[in-house]
Amino acid sequence: MGVWPGRGRSCIAAASTVALAQWVASDRAEPLLQTHAHRDVVAAALTAAHHRDATLAVVVDAAGSTYVRAGACALFAGGLQVGWLSGGCVEPGIARRAAQCAERGGIGWMDIDTRDDDDLLSGAALGCRGRLHLALLPLRALDGVDEALTAWLEGDGALAISVEVDGTVVMATPQRSWRWTLPTAVEAGARAAGDPRDQGVRVGHGRGGGPARSAVAGGGRIGAPGSGTDAVIDGSSRGAGVWHVTWPPPPRILLLGAGPEAPVLLPLLRATGWRTVLAEDRARWQPCAALADVHLGLPPAAAVTAAPPVLAALVMHHAFERDREALAALAPTSVAFVGLLGPVRRREDLFRVLPAGVRTALDGRLRSPVGLPLGGQGGEAIALSIAAQLQAWRHGEIKG
Image (cartoon, rainbow, N blue to C red; front, side, top):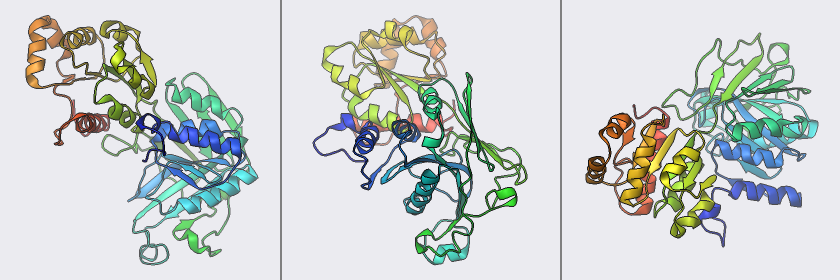
């Protein structure tokens, strides 16, 4: 991911939404690619929801060696792409199909299968042995989809998405649901049509007008800890003709205190899917507030009380008394991951002045020193080590 010319690191996380807003306003179709996490695809989709060319591609099934798994998504809107479904090999073909679906206002299906030897050794020579099954959803045809996406993005709960071959699309949060019936826009025999740019792409009809291959038979969890995705897919047989994926809500993290690590750490966390809450009331570190989703200008104990529910918290004030106050406030909470910045000696010094019950309450949740031992020194290296530990923990690579 790059920084736009003339702009600093503070704009990295927001680049896709800004770029899309400018593109929608100018109605241009100039190629523009960005690399973003799942939540940024959704944020960009909200900006483009009513544009005539905006299509959301959702992976409803995956098999073999693929870049993403079920539940992944990418936005295609004219010449703009936000998110990736491969290493860049198949996106041009997806973009062309997405544009066709947007023009027709109907659902499209794509089966991208590179498991055959012919796909490995000829044509585009993608070098992968996998299959992605995509549903292409034209956003302008989904009236009210911005409400569903906003609810998910703001943490109102998981978003369940159901897509049927007859054109029925359902999105639901724990609070409400949305339902649409769209015309189908399936093109039979796309590969046979001979577009040399679409090697490995199969678009066809199964029974009842559905995709050429069905999703996995029976229910199955794809995206269990360690797989690198949060999505859950309830597969179905070909006869049922319906696919379900669920997006868990974006996890929140509370950063208690900013410092030299924050300008790198906050964009890293956001780019890997976290909603960030920064608690910092010291004037020196106020510029970091622009990098967080939410800023609380409060001291540690008040911030822990005022913050929305969070999955993880980082204590990183570089100030002993503030760290003591933060640990004492976090002890009675249910925050699952509490990271403390600093060496082991600092942790032991803090526990000497904290009540014994604080240490007991944090047992099994406190990571100190926080961060994986990746090597290096300075704020950038520390930020990377913390983001790496959180990524591994969130996806089940680190237990406890």
